[in-house]
Image (tube, rainbow, N blue to C red; front, side):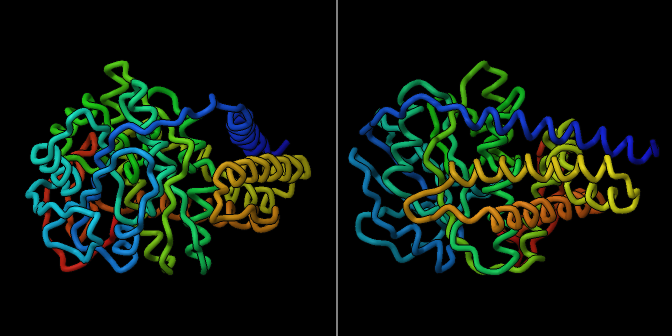
Length: 372
């Protein structure tokens, strides 16, 4: 057999086995979620909210328990009467962590569960309950799966496909994590122990990854919220999406360099293997790649089922297949872009030098830049 074909077959077996294990774990039913009405302090850090983010911040939240909703920002945005504004203008490199440290110092917690949710998330009572419940039950941290909705063009479909229908969905990442759990900082529930760890993360980019790592080192549990964090999409371009996920790849390389090579090997192998099967012309490799496509489509379909909400619907298989292939293409392009980028990232309008372990130092200030 051609050495390239043999190499391709080995790659297919590795990637296919990874997908099959993830699919198996995602078919298991988790424990029934218990209802909770614990008091909640909901923190929404934001610097300069967009029109869509203002809409999200003003949404009514139908949570059955006591809830205080606080927006943390340098200037007061337009908010409904039931949403409180706390002025916050931190000088820390990671302004999101700076906002949270200020709020935790200024606001009484009084036994309330602290939730931190980004302004681009449309918060519902179910999400509040889903995040607060595990923390009230003893988890050190709870995290929700970011679920983009309302996609329009191909760039939006690629982003939605990547986060909802590929291995990079945080639902799949959670069940496949070895060691510290994969955590997305868009929607978190913080225990007292997790809140204490934030003080050491003010100079980290990817504070969610570092927080999970530190909690794991202490033997503390991270729980996955069963309710997705819905993120309404605004029409974006391919270049904007590519810049966003390139930054994610740079952060991954800094935080967990051992996992960085797994991106092309396990998370984005389909397009390279399709190209290799065409170039080599091996029937065995072509058949194996077709099998990989089948397993990944089943995984994507299962992830689509798990992310279906009353405001979304289950898409046809052909659309699901296209979306996860677009998502893989976006992540592969971001990985390749990160290989040639300098160790600097532009985040929330500021440029930072990125160091080992996710630490960052300000490089220079730019008038605009990618949003987190």
